[in-house]
Image (cartoon, rainbow, N blue to C red; front, side):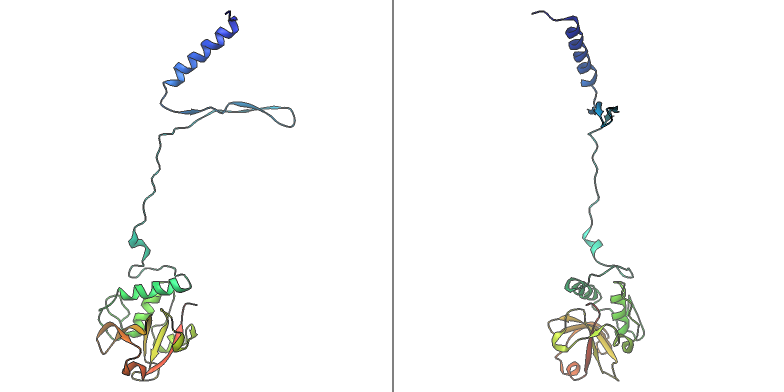
Length: 202
């Protein structure tokens, strides 16, 4: 079988290209081409070399980064998940001492506690029970949801506040217990002094 000189030269050039580029550790993506546009003018697309041995690693998000830290600000979703986040965060302070006028994080009074918890979720409440009783919207006792503020007439009109945690319970800074604790709404002391509730999260 006879080969023309032109075919032999093309074959030799092809083999030479394999020897040269085959030993290179970098994988080349060759994009040289001629593209004809609508005006019949030729446009050259230049080649590009792409390294394929690069690995991009993204850092894993730790579980701790999901919950707000003391004094931090974070957004809270409106709805049941946001309310449960508020309650879960409040429980992190169980047992912290009650100190009149304190607003956390090492000690609290009742309105200081509720203001601090909601403040961690970028919701500002005054450190005053009477002002908190005007916040949000009124909600009946039968329709309480976790995260709602519950108010009591303990030593005067609307003088105590806590956060409803569900199941007929609320978490609060109790002067009687001297600490952050959980109490039953149905307990005689609180049921007889119940003043109402406000929903901060719609």
